Length: 217
Length: 217
DNA sequence: GATGCTATTGAGTGTGCGACCAATAAGCAA
DNA sequence: TTGCTTATTGGTCGCACACTCAATAGCATC
Image 1 (cartoon, chains in turn brown, yellow, orange, blue):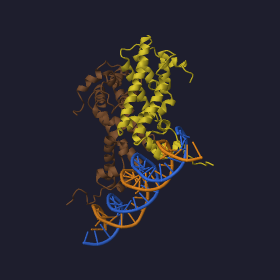
Image 2: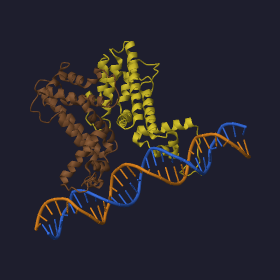
Image 3: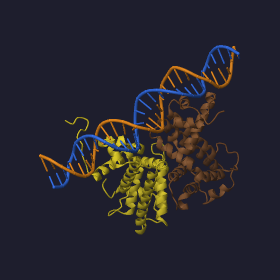
Image 4: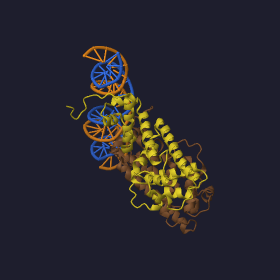
């Protein structure tokens, strides 16, 4: 009878085990923070011994970078799918802002702040953050380009506009976790406002279009 | 002969010693990060024993919060002096942006990111960050109000405009430490652009006015 | 110059961390 | 069923950390 502790070893293929470790690490990173990614913490999560984590990630820093990359990458796919068979760019962009502004995005905001701080000390993480920053910028720029081609958006340089939008989102994200009781909509909606201004959209276009999501989520 | 190590004790008044500790801690926080504020690190900096730091700050977390408050407070006074006997609001604001955009501001950006991340785990620091956020916002709003009274700026709500400017500055600060080689001026100058737009100023007003600083620094 | 207050030290405790490695056993193949 | 590969364990090491406290010594006061 296996009581509280697991007695029997479960032997998995290296690829499976490694993926399992990264997944668990990403979850911990998202909910508790990157500094909580310790050998012991992840081992406990998976009900294995710490030495096993060391076996797959001889240096814990590599696991930290991998976990961040996994979490940020997954979230980007959720926010702006790479393939967008249905829905107009305007609808996708509206959905993007709806997600990236609500409280459900708090964990992601915190993760970005966490990673941008921690990269100061961890070179491997620094590179990974750079990769994700590029990925987010290019994914958003792609969406903007699609909108420009369809005549929905108007901008000289979609890449620049994408960066501007992300800067505002990151700026708002910096205040995640602060008790901002009376934050006026002129501030809360800065990201949407910036997008509408830089893309030549009428005010309210991106908040109203969020009503019809591309996937019922 | 006092060789490399200090043999003789130096006995100071509690007030002096405490101030000295906070000053040293603020310097370390600014250059190395808040997690480097350890009893040993500060003691080494001051050539005293770690136990002495514990004596003045029984809980390290209080020293961390105090160090952040001191560093952020000093920097705010440098950026926007509370008393501004000389210079127009436009000149002061231009100087503010000149400082808050250059590389000299990198350490401050990093400190803010550091503190905003660490407040997740440290309640005392969380309160202190809140206090400083309010202080920065109000100081900037005061400057804007002065400009509105003199007819230099035009805005409905200086408090909201101040928040908007700070959000953009924090957003740009998030990318401090990333190797952004080719960042176009439309992004680099976002903070100034936002200010000029929200204050009804002609484009370039705030970058040109930085030429005549109120204090030769 | 002697005295008393207290700022400062030195030594020690317990915790959690990453890293290392020989021993073990799971599960596949023969 | 047997044997072999190797995924997994258990144990250990050294380090850095915050925190505690009795002992020490600087220095102001008399």
